[in-house]
Length: 337
Ligand code: HEM
Picture: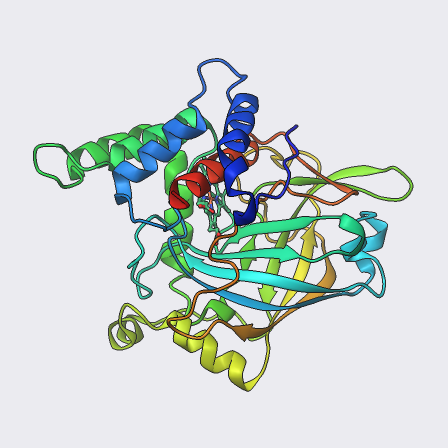
């Protein structure tokens, strides 16, 4: 299992080394695409945009706090989820993909990334999306998905026939877009739920381990745009909407830890668990400030790392989880150049 260290812009000089280290771990499995090859393929789909993330390119920084309910203590010894924990949070809200002008009124991925400032040198970051499934469940499948969406060199446009043929051969690719068609676009970053997608392994004080996922449920309720609202709101409203909303009152989410039943797939990022699974409400996230328009944000040069985990939480063996930090490090090193 990969455990990575936090990578900060102040460590820019170390980035190349970190990438090489992370890439080395991730490429140990023969024949798997490397993190560099995957980020190359992402760049072919969306182009390269100086200084921008290769996914989640359009986004805004925010900050707030997380308050534990204490109910998670029976599941994990992670300090964040113990009774009385109250922790400052740096956040980023984003639109999926490498296009910094990705339209806010299209049914597509939205992201919420969190970095918790835990006391005592412990670290915990989360990188979540508004769908309970990712686009593919294995690295070769994800590479094929990206390659099928790359522009045809002769036309400069994606080839609809090639896409349709590849989609027919790979039915798992339909899970996420089908979900998003029915459950997005959100009317606000604050009316979207955000899912861990991958499973993680919680360990409690008694040493008991179990796989879990988690969801952040918006206290404002889930709300998506109607077709009329999509036309009226336009392509660029989410960031100002969040600023206005948070200017009046904090935007809040309840963190729910979801427990699987025997037989639920634990290591597939395209397998959605049934909605009736037991959920434990472990805390409240309150976003209390959003970076003003046109100003650089604290999160801009950060890399949120979904496998930077505290004592009491480990990554599962899902390959789509364990490739993420190495790929994010490649993206970070390229966007800081
Ligand atoms: C469960 C699966 C995944 C989820 C939920 C997810 C979510 C996200 C989100 C929300 C961001 C924006 C982060 C930010 O705001 O800083 C992001 C960035 C990114 N994602 Fe993923 N992702 C997933 C899987 C993957 C995989 C499998 C890859 C490639 C192997 C990948 C590649 C990237 C890259 C390169 C970035 C840009 C990172 C940076 O420059 O900081 N993601 N992802």
